[in-house]
Amino acid sequence: MRSTQAAALGSEARWLRHLFSYTDTWVLVALFVATQLLDTLTTAYAVGTGQFSEANPIFGHLVSNDPLVAYGSKLLIAFLVLGVVLMLRLKWWIRRMVLGIFIMLSLVAPVANVLRVTGHL
Image (cartoon, rainbow, N blue to C red; front, side, top):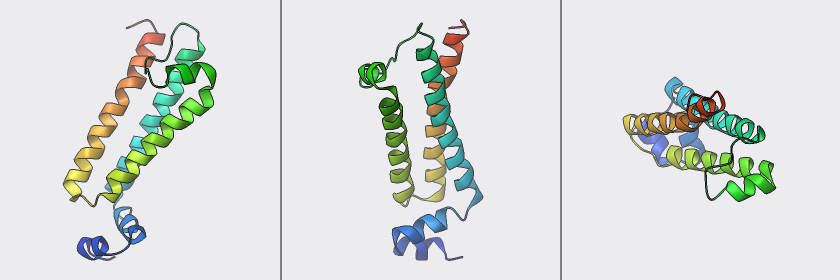
């Protein structure tokens, strides 16, 4: 395995291979992806019940007209943000902190969706 400094000076592919050689990167990326999918699934379920509507003003109209495009766009934006964070070549502790914050923020919507659907919010 190459050092972080050598990987940082190389290509983007080398940098990503270096990042994903660490277990913490795999775990954080998997958790971020899981929370994004959970958000999408719980939102689709809540909106599908007919009792709720999309609260996001940007995607509200799109969810009503073409939900697959809306949810696909939301996931695409999340993955683009993830890619940017990974490619910024941040120090490992900053990258872990940023991904951890993103994961925590990504949990807000699915938890709120579940609480709304079950009548607890």
